[in-house]
Each structure stands twice: as C-alpha cells, then as structure tokens.
Length: 199
Image 1 (cartoon, one colour):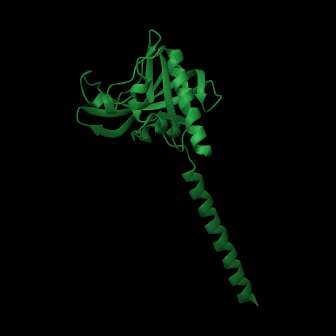
Image 2 (image 1 turned 180 degrees about the horizontal axis):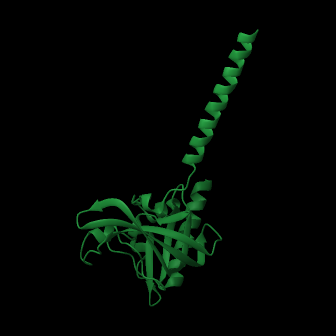
Image 3 (image 1 turned 45 degrees about the vertical axis):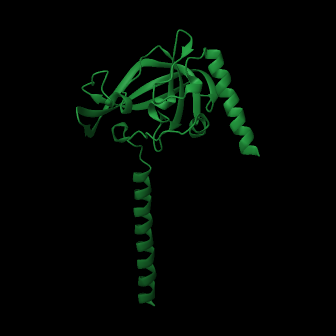
C-alpha cells in the first residue's frame, strides 16, 4: 500500500514539476521581444492590391519628433544596424485600427550612409518628422510595434499636397496624385479587393 502511495505521490510531484516547467517556458516565450532584436520584414508586394491585403493599417499622418534608437548586434558593410522606433500620429485611417497613434519600427545604418548609397533603400532609418505620409503597416509579432509593408513600398510622402512613390519601390498608381485623389484610389482598391473576396 505504501509503495502505491509513493508511486502516486511521485507522479503528482513529477506532473507538478512538468507543469511548473511548462508554465515557466510559456512565460519566457510570452516575454515581449526587445526592440533591438526585431528584424523588420522586407518582403515586397507584387501589386497595390497585395500591398493592401498585407497591410492591417493604412493611414495618413505624421511621425512625431520622439525617436528612440536600439542598436542591434547585426552589421552590414559600412556600419551597424540600428532599429529606430517612431510614433506615427494618425490623422485619417483608410483601413484598420481606430488608434490615434502607433509605434513604427524601422532599421537604419549607423553611421548614416551617403544619400546615394543603396543601403538606404533597404535600411532607410527614421523618417522626417512633421511631414505628411500615407503608410501601409503591419504589426510585428510579439511586439507593440508596426512596420512598413515592403519597407519603402509601404510609405508615400505627401509634398505640397501631392504623393510621391519611391522609384523602384512604390506603385505608380499612387505617384504624383493630389491627396484627395490618392485617398480615392486607395478606397476604390480596397472596395474592389473586398468585393473580390466576397465572391
């Protein structure tokens, strides 16, 4: 009888130990990802429709002056990679959240390369504050951050009321448009995508 009780007790202790270990492992895996450890996805979309599908948030707004830098342990020829976190102040939402601000993470090179360096196309670093942008964003898993879809493919500066698509990245359908026309194109494209998904 005692040996059976001992066996049951051992099973209970072993089960409790396994449960405790599993709980600790789940707590560790649920720990937030450090901003320095984030690797920003750079997969590009093949079309405007795909860009919109990959975006959980499409919005017009500005980056605030608040900027945080998180050096990574990754390097490229010419410098060290740094993750930058900027607050994006949302003025108008075309798709997604009703939040008024989101934190956007982006990678750059330190020291800053020459403006002609191709590194700027892959690692553009922080964007100018207090300027208008239309952005296509997706959440970064395990963090509170968003990142640009396709990096430069997912951001369109608005200068003097007209949109700019980065050459070789942005979609021509969204280039050199008055802001109202750009908004109209985005909404029309979202409606077409939504209608196609219903069929």
